[in-house]
Length: 91
Image 1 (tube, rainbow, N blue to C red):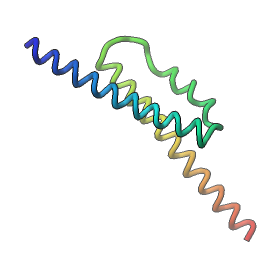
Image 2 (image 1 turned 30 degrees about the vertical axis):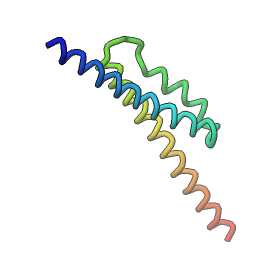
Image 3 (image 1 turned 135 degrees about the vertical axis):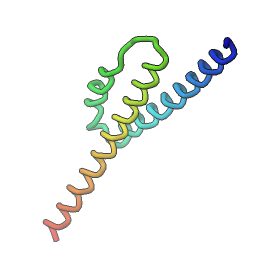
Image 4 (image 1 turned 60 degrees about the vertical axis):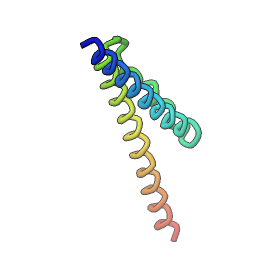
């Protein structure tokens, strides 16, 4: 039983590390290439509670990562549409 708890904790810690690395990648991409989105990063982080329950933390980290990814992807698509519309107007 104790061994299973340790394995679960290690798996949870590994998942947390991966999520944090992915969050950092997306955040850095936003800061470097899309600084106009930085103002929204604070709003998104407000959704993460400070509880130390590993299951909740992983769920919230995953939700945060998904939110960042969605925000970035939607913004990129929106910019592509705007750029294409501008090409049509100026053609």
